[in-house]
Length: 220
Image (cartoon, rainbow, N blue to C red):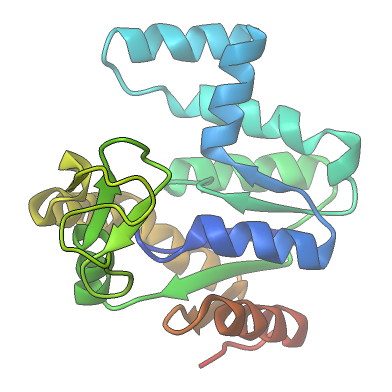
């Protein structure tokens, strides 16, 4: 299957992308991984992207599209892939369509993870990180430490990342609504969108997504 995964920040796209790709036997292709791989390997696209990033500028769509096209051409993606974080806007969606059309291929589904906006804010703004080891993550509602403000594992002080503040989360949501959300309607016009609720336990969301993808109908 060739799948695009979309949803707002905090919808659990990374977690679900990895689980779905494993279940479906296809590679998980994320924008973050593409950039890291190309930059670390010193590819022409990676060096160009790094130049823009160092200057504090946005990386042009054509560079991101080029990285994605190169990755989708790998042998492990011959029978399908799951795209996570790409396409990010209408221009990238059109470029992806053109690439697939030239290869006489097409998408099978666009999986839309639906989460109420206030739940997104609650999920992200409630996260707390350990100052000694940032792999120790807590949440003020869902995964509280035994002692407020103190890491259970190492005793480090817990803090909220600047990126996790409510103000920042709401700004990220605005960007999502303006830039990425329109691709849902773009793909809906192609009868590709499958929408499921991304509320509940991780395994339940995965099951819901797999059922919807295999059945070709939206889930609840």
